[in-house]
Length: 173
Image 1 (cartoon, rainbow, N blue to C red):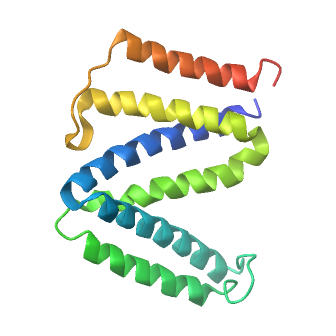
Image 2: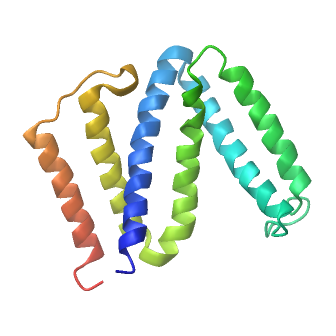
């Protein structure tokens, strides 16, 4: 039972990666691939620096060398990233701003979950979540993407990936 929750979190992170990919594709059509990547990166930086700022203000500074052990540095970076996001996100749906938070979830998830379940199991599970999410998003044509209907073969592919997760995990764990 000790790996069930981390596996579900890894599966959700994978689904988030599929959602991020679909959103980046739509944003890339609207602004260009480099601009979509830049917005996503800024959102990741903004999310991470906001987290570290709050943590530092609560008395738990990051375990980084100076000057990156101070809340003020992270606050400045968070504000700068948020300002960049505000400029870039003009004239596009505001929900595209969260694309970087999906990347942040992956980074946090890897840092927190990999020590508990291992690299292979984490990646197998996130990849399975990505495919399941991608199949669902393709089926509905999320964010203006082309529709690719769910088919028995696509469903079989997802089931086989989940079977791969079971094999990577092993039966005795």
